[in-house]
Length: 282
Image 1 (cartoon, rainbow, N blue to C red):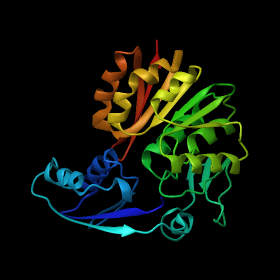
Image 2 (image 1 turned 60 degrees about the vertical axis):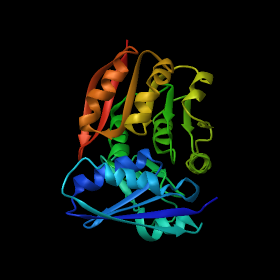
Image 3 (image 1 turned 180 degrees about the vertical axis):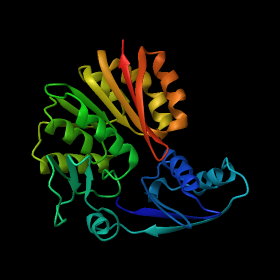
Image 4 (image 1 turned 90 degrees about the vertical axis):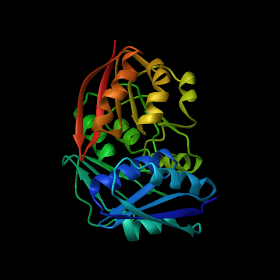
Protein backbone atom coordinates (compact mmCIF):
# COMPACT_ATOMS: atom_id res chain seq x y z
CA UNK A 1 0.00 0.00 0.00
CA UNK A 2 1.08 3.56 -0.69
CA UNK A 3 -1.33 5.38 1.65
CA UNK A 4 0.00 7.51 4.49
CA UNK A 5 -1.27 9.38 7.53
CA UNK A 6 -0.13 12.97 7.95
CA UNK A 7 0.30 13.92 11.59
CA UNK A 8 0.35 17.59 12.53
CA UNK A 9 1.44 18.76 15.98
CA UNK A 10 1.16 22.48 16.67
CA UNK A 11 3.37 23.48 19.59
CA UNK A 12 3.26 26.52 21.86
CA UNK A 13 5.83 27.79 22.57
CA UNK A 14 7.70 26.22 19.65
CA UNK A 15 11.46 25.82 19.18
CA UNK A 16 13.88 23.74 17.12
CA UNK A 17 14.78 21.76 20.23
CA UNK A 18 11.15 20.81 20.83
CA UNK A 19 10.50 19.75 17.22
CA UNK A 20 13.77 17.76 17.18
CA UNK A 21 12.72 15.85 20.30
CA UNK A 22 9.27 15.23 18.85
CA UNK A 23 10.83 13.93 15.63
CA UNK A 24 13.07 11.57 17.60
CA UNK A 25 10.13 10.10 19.54
CA UNK A 26 7.99 9.81 16.43
CA UNK A 27 10.78 8.13 14.45
CA UNK A 28 10.96 5.47 17.15
CA UNK A 29 7.20 4.98 16.67
CA UNK A 30 7.60 4.35 12.93
CA UNK A 31 7.21 7.82 11.44
CA UNK A 32 9.33 8.34 8.32
CA UNK A 33 9.56 12.03 7.47
CA UNK A 34 9.47 15.28 9.37
CA UNK A 35 8.90 18.87 8.29
CA UNK A 36 9.40 21.37 11.11
CA UNK A 37 8.33 25.00 11.00
CA UNK A 38 7.89 27.92 13.38
CA UNK A 39 4.60 26.54 14.72
CA UNK A 40 5.26 22.83 15.07
CA UNK A 41 5.93 19.60 13.21
CA UNK A 42 4.35 17.66 10.35
CA UNK A 43 5.19 13.97 10.11
CA UNK A 44 4.17 10.97 8.01
CA UNK A 45 3.61 7.29 8.70
CA UNK A 46 2.20 4.43 6.65
CA UNK A 47 -1.53 4.41 7.19
CA UNK A 48 -1.62 0.82 8.41
CA UNK A 49 0.94 1.66 11.12
CA UNK A 50 -0.86 4.73 12.44
CA UNK A 51 -1.73 4.47 16.16
CA UNK A 52 -3.30 7.49 17.82
CA UNK A 53 -2.67 5.99 21.27
CA UNK A 54 1.08 5.99 20.64
CA UNK A 55 0.96 9.64 19.61
CA UNK A 56 -1.07 10.56 22.70
CA UNK A 57 1.53 8.83 24.89
CA UNK A 58 4.35 10.82 23.27
CA UNK A 59 2.50 14.07 23.92
CA UNK A 60 1.48 13.08 27.43
CA UNK A 61 5.00 12.03 28.46
CA UNK A 62 6.91 14.79 26.66
CA UNK A 63 9.95 15.57 28.85
CA UNK A 64 9.71 19.39 28.73
CA UNK A 65 7.17 21.29 30.83
CA UNK A 66 4.81 24.21 30.15
CA UNK A 67 4.26 23.25 26.51
CA UNK A 68 0.89 23.02 24.77
CA UNK A 69 0.44 20.63 21.86
CA UNK A 70 -2.49 20.43 19.48
CA UNK A 71 -2.59 17.16 17.50
CA UNK A 72 -4.48 16.39 14.29
CA UNK A 73 -4.12 13.78 11.56
CA UNK A 74 -5.16 13.47 7.94
CA UNK A 75 -5.39 10.45 5.64
CA UNK A 76 -3.13 10.87 2.59
CA UNK A 77 -4.07 8.68 -0.37
CA UNK A 78 -1.24 7.00 -2.28
CA UNK A 79 0.25 9.21 -4.96
CA UNK A 80 3.35 9.90 -7.02
CA UNK A 81 5.72 10.65 -4.16
CA UNK A 82 8.52 11.64 -6.55
CA UNK A 83 6.32 14.48 -7.75
CA UNK A 84 5.56 15.46 -4.15
CA UNK A 85 9.26 15.60 -3.31
CA UNK A 86 10.02 17.62 -6.43
CA UNK A 87 7.37 20.21 -5.63
CA UNK A 88 7.76 20.53 -1.88
CA UNK A 89 10.82 19.01 -0.23
CA UNK A 90 13.77 17.56 -2.08
CA UNK A 91 16.31 20.13 -3.31
CA UNK A 92 19.87 19.40 -4.51
CA UNK A 93 22.43 19.29 -1.70
CA UNK A 94 26.22 19.46 -1.84
CA UNK A 95 28.39 18.10 0.99
CA UNK A 96 31.88 19.47 1.59
CA UNK A 97 32.06 20.62 -2.01
CA UNK A 98 32.78 17.01 -2.96
CA UNK A 99 29.47 15.19 -3.12
CA UNK A 100 26.28 16.44 -4.75
CA UNK A 101 22.96 14.66 -4.17
CA UNK A 102 20.05 15.40 -6.45
CA UNK A 103 17.13 13.79 -8.22
CA UNK A 104 16.73 13.01 -11.90
CA UNK A 105 14.19 15.82 -12.19
CA UNK A 106 16.60 18.53 -10.93
CA UNK A 107 18.15 21.08 -13.27
CA UNK A 108 21.23 23.30 -12.85
CA UNK A 109 23.01 20.78 -10.62
CA UNK A 110 26.26 21.89 -8.94
CA UNK A 111 29.38 20.06 -10.14
CA UNK A 112 31.12 17.75 -7.67
CA UNK A 113 33.51 14.81 -7.69
CA UNK A 114 30.78 12.43 -6.56
CA UNK A 115 27.39 12.90 -8.22
CA UNK A 116 24.60 10.83 -6.63
CA UNK A 117 21.15 10.64 -8.20
CA UNK A 118 18.34 9.81 -5.76
CA UNK A 119 14.69 9.47 -6.74
CA UNK A 120 13.03 9.03 -3.33
CA UNK A 121 9.56 7.63 -2.80
CA UNK A 122 8.26 8.64 0.63
CA UNK A 123 10.99 10.17 2.78
CA UNK A 124 13.53 7.39 3.05
CA UNK A 125 16.47 9.77 3.16
CA UNK A 126 17.67 12.39 0.73
CA UNK A 127 20.90 13.50 2.40
CA UNK A 128 19.37 16.63 3.90
CA UNK A 129 19.16 15.35 7.45
CA UNK A 130 22.11 16.18 9.67
CA UNK A 131 22.79 12.52 10.49
CA UNK A 132 23.14 11.55 6.82
CA UNK A 133 25.42 14.45 6.00
CA UNK A 134 27.57 13.70 9.07
CA UNK A 135 28.23 10.17 7.83
CA UNK A 136 28.77 11.37 4.25
CA UNK A 137 31.46 13.74 5.54
CA UNK A 138 33.17 10.83 7.29
CA UNK A 139 33.07 8.62 4.20
CA UNK A 140 34.62 11.39 2.13
CA UNK A 141 37.70 11.41 4.38
CA UNK A 142 38.16 7.64 4.77
CA UNK A 143 40.21 5.23 2.65
CA UNK A 144 37.49 3.02 1.16
CA UNK A 145 39.23 1.41 -1.82
CA UNK A 146 38.60 -2.36 -1.69
CA UNK A 147 37.12 -2.05 1.81
CA UNK A 148 34.05 -4.18 2.54
CA UNK A 149 31.11 -2.19 3.83
CA UNK A 150 27.73 -2.96 5.38
CA UNK A 151 25.12 -0.18 5.43
CA UNK A 152 22.35 -0.94 7.93
CA UNK A 153 19.05 0.84 7.35
CA UNK A 154 20.19 2.00 3.94
CA UNK A 155 16.99 3.95 3.09
CA UNK A 156 17.47 5.43 -0.38
CA UNK A 157 20.94 3.84 -0.53
CA UNK A 158 22.90 7.11 -0.46
CA UNK A 159 25.67 5.92 1.87
CA UNK A 160 26.12 2.59 0.10
CA UNK A 161 26.25 4.32 -3.29
CA UNK A 162 28.86 6.84 -2.13
CA UNK A 163 30.96 4.05 -0.62
CA UNK A 164 30.88 2.14 -3.92
CA UNK A 165 31.78 5.30 -5.84
CA UNK A 166 34.83 5.68 -3.60
CA UNK A 167 36.02 2.14 -4.33
CA UNK A 168 34.47 0.08 -1.54
CA UNK A 169 33.90 -3.56 -2.49
CA UNK A 170 31.84 -5.52 -1.63
CA UNK A 171 29.03 -3.24 -0.41
CA UNK A 172 26.02 -4.77 1.34
CA UNK A 173 22.99 -2.57 2.07
CA UNK A 174 20.23 -3.79 4.40
CA UNK A 175 16.76 -2.25 4.67
CA UNK A 176 13.79 -3.48 6.71
CA UNK A 177 11.05 -1.53 4.92
CA UNK A 178 9.85 -3.21 1.67
CA UNK A 179 9.09 0.08 -0.12
CA UNK A 180 12.43 1.59 0.90
CA UNK A 181 14.17 -1.60 -0.23
CA UNK A 182 12.63 -1.30 -3.69
CA UNK A 183 13.63 2.37 -3.82
CA UNK A 184 17.22 1.56 -2.80
CA UNK A 185 17.48 -1.08 -5.54
CA UNK A 186 16.23 1.48 -8.07
CA UNK A 187 18.71 4.13 -6.89
CA UNK A 188 21.63 1.70 -6.93
CA UNK A 189 20.89 0.89 -10.58
CA UNK A 190 20.28 4.57 -11.38
CA UNK A 191 23.83 5.37 -10.23
CA UNK A 192 25.42 2.53 -12.17
CA UNK A 193 26.37 0.36 -9.20
CA UNK A 194 24.27 -2.81 -9.56
CA UNK A 195 27.03 -4.71 -7.74
CA UNK A 196 25.73 -3.28 -4.44
CA UNK A 197 23.75 -6.06 -2.78
CA UNK A 198 20.52 -4.53 -1.38
CA UNK A 199 18.99 -6.93 1.13
CA UNK A 200 15.45 -6.82 2.54
CA UNK A 201 15.66 -7.60 6.25
CA UNK A 202 16.68 -6.54 9.73
CA UNK A 203 19.82 -7.17 11.80
CA UNK A 204 19.25 -10.93 11.57
CA UNK A 205 20.32 -10.69 7.90
CA UNK A 206 23.84 -9.91 9.10
CA UNK A 207 24.39 -13.55 10.01
CA UNK A 208 24.42 -14.40 6.29
CA UNK A 209 27.06 -11.80 5.39
CA UNK A 210 30.82 -11.97 5.75
CA UNK A 211 32.17 -9.56 8.43
CA UNK A 212 33.01 -6.17 6.96
CA UNK A 213 35.81 -3.65 7.37
CA UNK A 214 33.29 -0.86 7.97
CA UNK A 215 29.72 -0.99 9.26
CA UNK A 216 27.38 2.00 8.97
CA UNK A 217 24.09 2.39 10.82
CA UNK A 218 22.05 5.58 10.61
CA UNK A 219 18.83 4.52 12.35
CA UNK A 220 17.93 5.57 15.91
CA UNK A 221 19.35 5.06 19.38
CA UNK A 222 17.03 2.29 20.55
CA UNK A 223 17.44 0.10 17.48
CA UNK A 224 21.20 0.63 17.41
CA UNK A 225 21.60 -0.27 21.08
CA UNK A 226 19.31 -3.29 20.72
CA UNK A 227 21.17 -4.61 17.67
CA UNK A 228 24.69 -3.77 18.84
CA UNK A 229 25.72 -7.40 19.37
CA UNK A 230 24.71 -8.28 15.80
CA UNK A 231 26.56 -5.23 14.48
CA UNK A 232 29.72 -6.20 16.33
CA UNK A 233 29.63 -9.77 15.03
CA UNK A 234 29.30 -8.38 11.49
CA UNK A 235 32.46 -6.29 11.85
CA UNK A 236 36.03 -7.57 11.42
CA UNK A 237 38.55 -7.23 14.22
CA UNK A 238 40.13 -3.81 13.80
CA UNK A 239 37.10 -2.67 11.79
CA UNK A 240 35.33 0.67 12.08
CA UNK A 241 31.70 1.22 13.02
CA UNK A 242 30.05 4.56 12.24
CA UNK A 243 26.71 5.21 13.92
CA UNK A 244 24.20 8.04 13.74
CA UNK A 245 20.50 8.77 14.14
CA UNK A 246 20.68 10.00 17.74
CA UNK A 247 21.48 13.12 19.73
CA UNK A 248 24.80 14.20 21.22
CA UNK A 249 23.52 13.48 24.73
CA UNK A 250 22.85 9.86 23.65
CA UNK A 251 26.52 9.20 22.86
CA UNK A 252 27.38 7.78 26.33
CA UNK A 253 24.43 5.36 26.13
CA UNK A 254 25.43 4.12 22.68
CA UNK A 255 29.14 3.95 23.54
CA UNK A 256 28.43 1.96 26.70
CA UNK A 257 26.28 -0.53 24.78
CA UNK A 258 29.10 -0.91 22.23
CA UNK A 259 31.84 -1.33 24.84
CA UNK A 260 30.55 -4.70 26.05
CA UNK A 261 30.99 -6.08 22.52
CA UNK A 262 34.60 -5.02 22.12
CA UNK A 263 33.94 -1.66 20.47
CA UNK A 264 35.84 1.40 21.66
CA UNK A 265 34.80 4.98 20.92
CA UNK A 266 37.39 6.82 18.82
CA UNK A 267 35.67 10.13 18.06
CA UNK A 268 32.37 11.80 17.29
CA UNK A 269 31.02 14.73 15.29
CA UNK A 270 27.86 16.75 15.81
CA UNK A 271 25.56 19.14 13.99
CA UNK A 272 22.50 20.81 15.50
CA UNK A 273 22.70 18.39 18.43
CA UNK A 274 22.63 15.32 16.15
CA UNK A 275 25.67 13.07 16.48
CA UNK A 276 27.80 10.65 14.50
CA UNK A 277 29.87 8.24 16.59
CA UNK A 278 32.90 6.30 15.36
CA UNK A 279 34.09 3.12 17.10
CA UNK A 280 36.89 0.63 16.55
CA UNK A 281 36.56 -3.11 17.18
CA UNK A 282 39.43 -4.56 19.19
